[in-house]
Image (tube, rainbow, N blue to C red):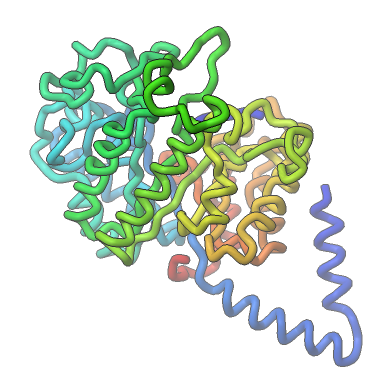
Length: 415
């Protein structure tokens, strides 16, 4: 999950109030519509991300014994229940490794401190059982292509697939990635993820915003050889790269529906597909990153093709942000998912809620609650996901407690 720092709310509320105050038959019709809308809204997705990479949320540190790791995990699940959430998104493949006894990849270093070392228990299996016992959905969060936060294959576990197949990897900006342009890599990463899906009753498969890596100034992602071998049918390298990611999404969608039909497939991208000054179909934003152009992730296409069941754009800006206004991003995504069958959940930057923030909006304990109030004006928005779990626990600036008090008076089922 990338930490990104990047007014028509009153007008919208005024419009709703005006409509509610209309007289005669029209008022009765609107009231009936309102009752139906409220009935449909009774079920909503309320979730938090639990990041394991670099021990962001869990475990709190590498090397804890199995009982302490388990206790920390169940405490997070208990917090989710206490905050009236109904789902957790647990990172179980943070970097080409595993939070379960995987058939194809080593145990994650974030458990024991040593990649490949057995932690003495099954975190994913336990998480599924404990979440379900509490009435929570458990969505398994995988990162498809990140291999390591360094570029030295010799530091990987001895039997690591990336170490056995060095031609699969590309060093970039001090990190190591699998090359999305290689069909054998695409097949392997799917098998690695589906190993977990086939063995555990997960409620969803979840990917974050890392496809091709975020651009770094002066760096080049060296996929020349793969492009020479596989890119001949495309007008440009960019088109080829986008097709590589499209193919991964499309294939994973079909395989997930075959292996575990009840599980849903969701992706949480950086929230800007394209700025409207690049593409008239884009959002009215001026973001420095566009997923279509910079990550080669055509997030709009995945929704409209029906390849994913839900999307969680990381709308990590305040209402009124000059380059990427929350109040402009949410309507754009609502319009994008309309009629597609894909659910829209909004990724919320709880981590930015800080009484000492340099941004006035984030110093306001009500900023996040205002986001939910605004989003309720768009029926396509069917929930929110909070980054991240440790902030749900810590409740910076009282922002999460305010959200619960204002919007989550009772527990509800997910969707």
